[in-house]
Image (tube, rainbow, N blue to C red):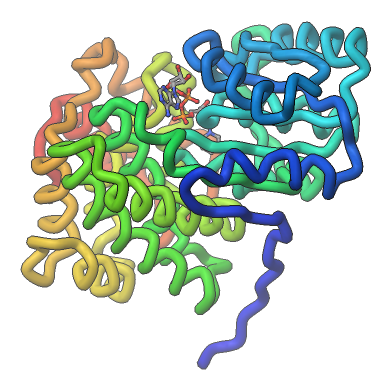
Amino acid sequence: MDAFEYTPNTGRVVFGSGTLQKLPEEIARLGVTAPLVLSTPQQVEQAERVKSVLGGKVAGIFSEATMHTPTHVTDKALAFATAHNADAVVSIGGGSTIGLGKAISVRTGLPHVCIPTTYAGSEMTPILGETAEGVKKTRSDPAILPGTVIYDVDLTMTLPPAMSATSGVNAIAHAVEALYARNTNPIINLMAVEGTRALAASLPEIVVDSSSQSARSNALYGAWLCGTCLGSVGMSLHHKLCHTLGGSFNLPHAETHTAVLPHAIAYNAPYIPETLQKLAAVLPGSEGDAITGLNVLLDKLQVQRGLKAFGMKEEDIDRAADIAVSNPYWNPRPIERAPVRELIRRIWAGEPAR
Ligand code: NAD
């Protein structure tokens, strides 16, 4: 066994079906009495359920969470929290709502209870991306990590199949990059492989039957493990590329991750033989080849593969390549402009990875 260092993140996790009912216990455990409930406008109904489970004992509901955590929305939510004497935040939703919960919690020190309803994994990370004046900046701080996470599979049943598919591949991407991270370790490897196995098996089932409780439960379990990977070790080409493409060309988060993943792995392939072997073992239909396995998975999920479908223009490819190579970072294979440009071109066109 090689030497390694590992600092586990220490949040509390409650997992299962019907676990939303445990929220009053978790709130009491924190010694708070007036949480502010956060959601997007699309999930007000679920925020109302949170309020009802707490017997109406909330500071209020703030339902204006939005993509990329703009600071003007955070400021509005903070003013609302202060006006209503909130002593905690409860975020129910995907990465956008959890981002708002983190932004409030890190500014105020209020405890943060997360109830994730997608597979993006933000709840397990000490990372926060915020947008001010059109620029998204990401930072990491242990104080950002939510203290309590309640995974209730019942709340994920309404996530539409297409969104479930891309959100699940977003989660797999965290695991893949964790496998070859420079600071990876054997525990994170176990979680990455198990998380990928659970998602690769369950996502195609969800696309066929989104009401399958067992598939939903497996996917949420996989998402938890993959989110832990994201929060524990460094990410490289895949995540940097998604950040660049998403931020610069206003592309949708999970869909971008889905289109990029097989190509990012193909770019790194000659440098990551062990990762490829581990992935191939848990991707059905891989026939021993991880990239084939991912292509098979994406075919089964019937997802959009080309970023041109999301509004990225052919003339954006060069600018994307320039941005992608402008900030150096560690990656198993050196980042070189010509092959990175070709990689982005293939992603833009939706050509299969090879
Ligand atoms: P999202 O939170 O933007 O949600 C997308 C839409 O789906 C929203 O309208 C939401 O209300 C709706 N939705 C969510 N769950 C639903 C459900 N169960 N049923 C019906 N509708 C539902 O999407 P996301 O992919 O979870 O998050 C993306 C954002 O999170 C991005 O801004 C990304 O940068 C951020 N993110 C951050 C981290 C981190 O560690 N900081 C990790 C992953 C993602």
